[in-house]
Image (cartoon, rainbow, N blue to C red):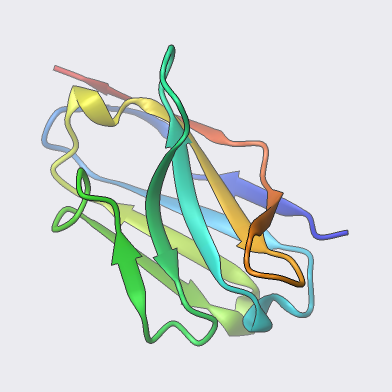
Length: 118
């Protein structure tokens, strides 16, 4: 069982920045693709960003591309999400996730709240 724990959420004004962290309990973390998702009240879960096992390849959802940066430090079993130029539309619970033995995201953290005020 892989455990993921997010941190770094909070409240910020529009235009501000936050950095989210996700620490994994899994020693095989470096062999798993990982990503960030978010869910706003009343909306479906949305893909935010994904990163390859070694960190060389990243991809982003259209709404965050150019503002958010995903990265990882496999020596610390940790993934990050740097969020810049935040807007109220970025308000959501942010979840980190990693794939299981296949290609689907199978393991999820409990989420961290990000609130952006105008």
